Image (cartoon, rainbow, N blue to C red; front, side, top):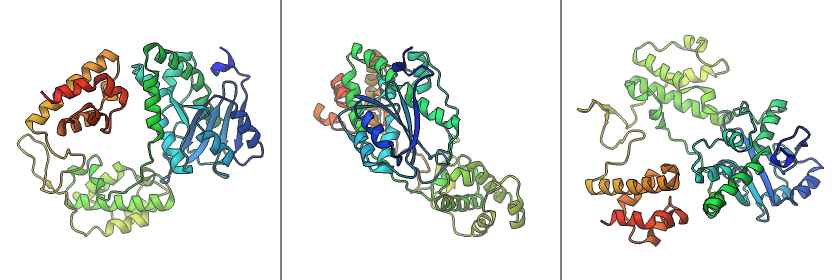
Length: 402
């Protein structure tokens, strides 16, 4: 396989800080390319405040791993990545688009997302590793996927992993593009990728009552829930202040264990907690003890009530409970939803697409609840694109106006 396909042991590979004096010549060289493969590595698995820690860029013949932690994003690189003069090839671009906006306030240029392209071809295994193997016969490793990319220096294994994420992207995009053209779906991809450019990073909003969504929370009694809530609030404060992912401060199962012990009147004493072997060694145990000892406040609004006749938990008025739907559909709406789902499923089968990728259940539910009067109204709804509307819009409208 030629170097243009990403293979070849002699393929050049450069690692540099974005403040390096060589960056100007590197960016000038990259600017001559009509297509660039792009990826990022962030610290979301290890840190509370997520940011881009590495930027990988590949041409058909060379790979670059750029470190922005010290110098940030220089103007030349910012201009290169935001320009619409070339195509940026990414896999799963949604995450990277949001990350560039969050970290650098940068909107990326024109995109080609190989994950979306594979979805439009009806592929079932959409991972980069699987697609590279299926299309190019190459193997890439995902062993460093959960590395702490904010730590320096990076290991050779980390750098090689980062390089692999863009090394084969251009060749993969070329193969997928040929197949999309043969099916007449390239314009679908362009519309999807243009929509991706507009996605915005979501702000991290802490919900102090979200502890009830933790597995096992609903089985706790009043005292156990107070302890769980106290541990949950304390964990969030520590994670935010120390910039550590919450689960690295205290895992969910450990918080549930504290709640269970409290319900059994077997919560360890302050001395036992500070010496406990099943809590993380690096944990500020004194701080946790202080938080748990202050668990006297009344229970939050979401109270458990006895099970209903079906054996399912019910909740007091005014509280739906975590993850509960806002209400059941009435009979007419339910029938509209079922007809919409049948139309969606049949169209997806004809196209060889995953039904959920084609149109989500949440979108069908919104249509069922408030049927649009025209194709134009349908096309304006969030959750449907123009190409989807062209393919199945009239059938959807007909199904809700029977």
